[in-house]
Length: 375
Image 1 (spheres, rainbow, N blue to C red):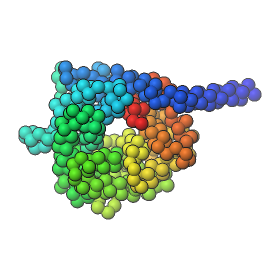
Image 2 (image 1 turned 45 degrees about the vertical axis):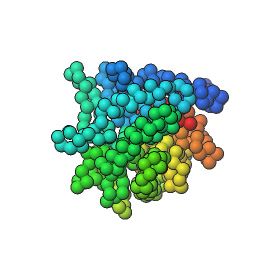
Image 3 (image 1 turned 180 degrees about the vertical axis):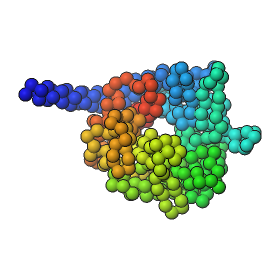
Image 4 (image 1 turned 120 degrees about the vertical axis):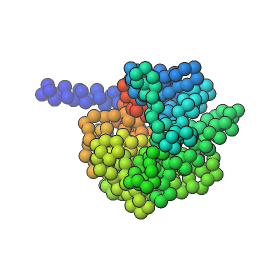
């Protein structure tokens, strides 16, 4: 009897805790929660390199790592913070300078420099090493940050826009498969190899494609948007859950999830650490396909007592713990689909703002910050 009472009290404490956080966020948002999250992220994950460069540390303090994906996220976050009055153009330019200092080379002799960013830098044996080859998602994030920067800081709008156009053109030149109409995963992909048909679902960024089409006046970006969203719809329809894998094999007509350990790890064919961005990505898309896929995923997650950090496409959990990398994008998605049957997720996923930002989880901390400032 006493045990049941204690369980009841414990349950009520959890409920009241969620309610308290709910009212804290509703009353103080956007300013207080946003600012606190951004300041914690900036302090923990931004690292100065020299006097005029800053990178987002995706590693640890002892073993720092820079990634083009992380740099893209950092640039986007900084533009959002600048709109709120918390960041300056100089903050953005230092992050931008790091990207400019680590652009890739596409020929075998590494003499033909392009606007794509080398995907990884790390510190080893007392010096920095930068690995050749690009990652498409990082390049797309950098491009959209440049687009936003050109609108925020008009005095340098031409400079930012020119960089954006050069980057967008190189993405289509070196990270695009004309046979499928889809973007590849990076400039390392040879069009005569099997990897030319490898499709990373988190590279489907409809809001970015729309902006690039307008800025570059190139309708091919509209074609890319339509082709890649069509593949996501096909993947979404393959399972009742609506869940989408990190990677898939895609031809002109068909698409299917890859097998485990195809490219990055054992969860390549599952809803894992790439596809988890999709609720954020698709909520920003103002088109019927994006909204269809988003609703299907949110409908599935709304039926779960707890949203865990990874799923097989059938809905079986990969782990038994929550993760801000998964919860933050879902929280963002719910905020764009309020009153449509998913509001329980607003309460359950807001736990990410009820405690300090993670200090040993670049990805979760960065997605949490991105969602906090991207309103």
